[in-house]
Length: 268
Image (cartoon, rainbow, N blue to C red; front, top):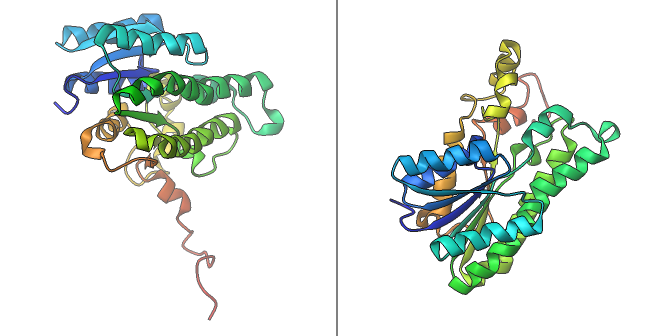
């Protein structure tokens, strides 16, 4: 029980990586606030955790709104008396899949929504959680970025920019709050099969193309949740300011030079 009696807020926990993390954290003893805009699925996740003997509560939360972020932190405190873990995982991934583009083709409204949710949401949730953690002299913040912010991917410019900001903000917060006993780290997943990706992965040609760029396999939400558990647990107490790429070898594959390439060979 690595998180026994810890209190965690997980944003974007109604599906995908957030849902897998909520289940796992609860199994490890955490009391979990499932924060998401998706009331139907968010409520179902909390109910599933409670039925399995864990402790969870759903709260409808728009992380791009300061009042909602404040309410999430206040609810966790009022319900369970403290806040130990904030996992900033919410992002408009479906919007990225359907409407993200290269800059010259990118709709300004898509850019605004991506920045508001994926980057500003991390800022707002952290802004309200940090004073609580500072009073406790203890806390962990974990942020979700993406491998796309580490290596370039075509035509997802708003998503890449927002998540690149998340990585930079992670490092800055780690520096600012280390003296308060607060650790801040970041996870950068690669291709992960979540509910909003199923339609794309159901296309055999698209799936084969994605699998061909990995050294192992495509990811599952549980793969990311297991790493998240480690990072928020005491086992990672020496880690802060880190961005951990977990991508099945995707980034290593992308940087692998072609067999005929002389790019990395020194002239003799």
